Length: 238
Ligand code: UDP
Image (cartoon, rainbow, N blue to C red; front, top):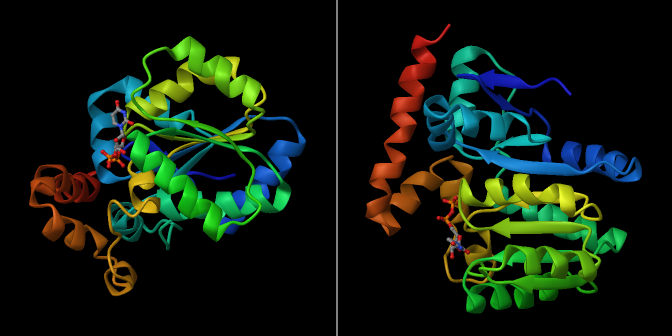
């Protein structure tokens, strides 16, 4: 799979369907896979910290979550033409897991959020095998790993925010040999539970979901300043 690189950070050009097809093969081969969402905020963090860069680049799939990467691809003449968001990728993986009868584990967010998210996921994916769940404030990592291993989970969604969730995955995937797919999903459980509303479709279609999120929580301005900074850096890079 040919990756594109923006300021030294890899991005996978595959669509949702492309990733699922690729994963199907990797699962058959017994390979473990990791999915990480890439956005301007993470690219800038990666520029500052080589460990973050290594963490992103060593993932199996780096998805272009957000308009920033798309704009960078436009500037650089890259092949990435549509977004692959973390939350939509998770929705596709849930459908895939249901169809293939692969048990799923949910780790992260507040207890009430993760349980609500699971109920709503069960409604939209009847028959989904829920291996188990743990809220994101569990302190005993060894016990958690043990619990996931005995649950029989094949896919796990980790919702602790970045880079916490990615570090957790990197630290533990070696001892979670039966889990084949790991996705770091940030605030996605909050979305599935209905605690956080996604932008209306029109905003998403126009690629201005960031504007909706900014209006609904203006304190995000600090995080969102990474977008223009990122674009300036891409423009200046060769
Ligand atoms: N969270 C958690 N454990 C922690 C810190 C955060 O489970 O120790 C959860 C938090 O409840 C929220 C998610 O992680 O559900 C973070 O979402 P955010 O939108 O900050 O993540 P992003 O997608 O921006 O990385």
